[in-house]
Image (cartoon, rainbow, N blue to C red; front, side, top):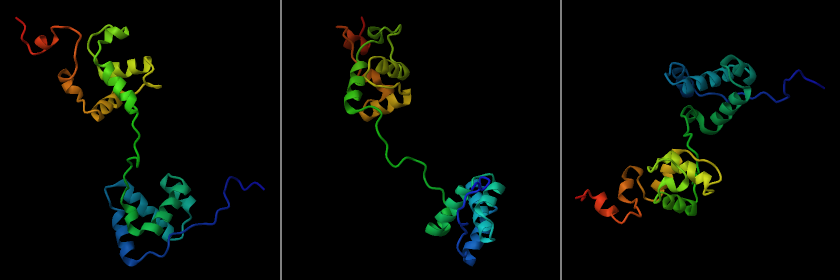
Length: 179
């Protein structure tokens, strides 16, 4: 039987709110932070007996979002007004250690050896060549290359301290001892 798009979920309402919680929620309606104000609106509307779908429609969000806030309030109480960090809990390196070492080695050669028209590496160019040469299976951003080098203890701005050249006169030229 078609129900017109409405689901058959049992309505969910916020538990009875204490007087202290109600004062905090009402104060939150005047917050300059949209996150706090919106959650306060949801919880107070639910405490008045409004259904999650109706609250969501009024606030321009989904009923499921309202239900998530109600469940979070049940679990965490008034702390639900504090936004959690959006940083990932686990970060994976884009370059494996082996790939990172190949990147570092690559930078000890001239970009011209890889068919480029410049003799100066940029992070973007390094990312491009890594992908072209199969060091990485996808093209990473210049920031990913910078972070990978940083992980190896290589600071891009100070590359002149660790990059070498096959030129026999390189050390002398590098230290400006040109006669």
